Image (cartoon, rainbow, N blue to C red):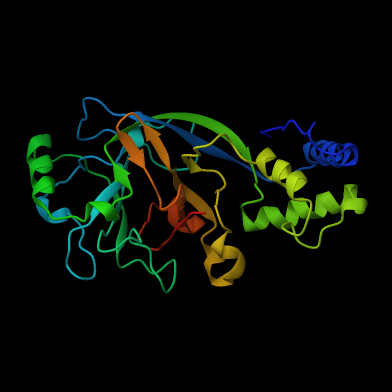
Length: 292
């Protein structure tokens, strides 16, 4: 589960500190979670019910397109077909229906709330249990193309297909809970490199430590632990810590003519309260994206 780094470029004592830390983490009962990895590729031959990033959404009615606070139509960023998920997944209690995430294109904030990250008037996270519709793919596509959007305020251009795979992920230094757990272990085994704060010092060494707990970029996934370009917003706002479960993460990416760009090569995440995820309730969620 650890992405062990080549630290031969570091000073010898820093290499030894890194090795001690990694060995100790592997001995400890550090929290880990199942996640569903998402391999993205440019979609060819798009269908209505497929899992996708971007593209034509499933709609039961043309009136189902969400509207933002100004009454403008939103655009769908992601659609997850639950029946395509690995059979052994434990993140969701069901294996049918669709998850969709929509955002406003009114400005370049991609539907993000400027006041509170769980205040979502310009985005929607919805679960559709019944996937029967009288509308055809072409009817929905034509309707969506007739709507007015600001192209420069849409982070997805083109359409990505999704291939899923199961994995196990150890808590990361991006997650505010991981910082406390892993910093304590670091200081126990490396008193000569003691840190009050994970961001304090030893830039090259700590970059290697960070990468040890990160997967290969781009990191697109359902469940597991999040990645942030800046810092976990739940670290500085305790009211947001009730949103403990990562549901969806979409990273900036490019495949052929399809591209995802959250600002300057950023990452977007969606979180739920655990009890809401177990009940498949998606009205109350934390949405965040950040970039460098």
